[in-house]
Structures are given as C-alpha cells and as structure tokens.
Length: 158
Image (tube, rainbow, N blue to C red; front, side):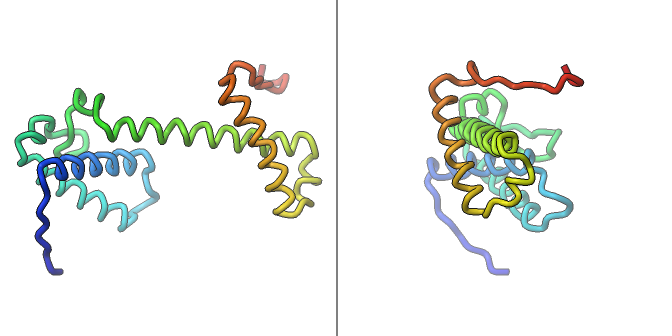
C-alpha cells in the first residue's frame, strides 16, 4: 500500500485529533457487532492519528495514555470542554428525542387502531399517520418537555 504525506496546520491537526476522539467514542458506544473489519480499521487509523497528534506540543499537553483503552487519548479535563464533546452531547440529545417521539407515535397508532388494523394499512398510510402523530408529539415536547407526557404502566407492573 502506498503512503501519502499530508501537511496540516497545528489547528487542523487539533481538529483532526478531536474528530478521531469523537469517532473512537462513538465506536466504543456503538460497539459494532463481532469482528467488524471496517470498524477495526477506523479505530486503528484514529489511534494512529491521535498518537501523531500527541507529538504536537499544543495538543499533546491535553493527552495522556489511557490504560483502559490502551492508547493515547485526551485527558478528562480537556474532554469536558472539547468541541467534539458538545457535538456528541447534541447528537445524543437529538437521537433520544427523535427516537422517543417516533416510538411514542408508533405505539399510539397501535393503541388507537389495534395491531391488526395497523398491519393492514399500506406503508404510505401508516407513515402518514405516524408522521401526523410525530408532529403533534414534537410540538408537545418542544413546548413543554416531558412535563405533560404521561406514561401508564399495566396494573401488573405498578
């Protein structure tokens, strides 16, 4: 395999190191199934780039060898204020709310029409009805948060 030389400014290397930290964090949380060669290749590349970034004094002072993962990574104090942490937090929040709204809408459709009726709906009809419910739920949670949502447990679980 041929090698390439890339010239980066210190700022660009800093951004690249944070991007690698974000990818490694996401891969660690996603835990791709089994031996995923692509995930392993991404991890090796990110680890190599973080090791190279460690050699830049303005970046290296924010890094330490992490014995839990076995490679150089940013220190916790740096992670707490890093841009990539903000991006991950926003992503997690958005994913949580989108998933909550989507699942609530699908559950509401089944509760209102029954499994059989929902299964008889065309994909387009089901999608249209879920979309309408999602819009109403998004409006509710974006206006009031979770305050007015009610979760009811079956009598056997309460």
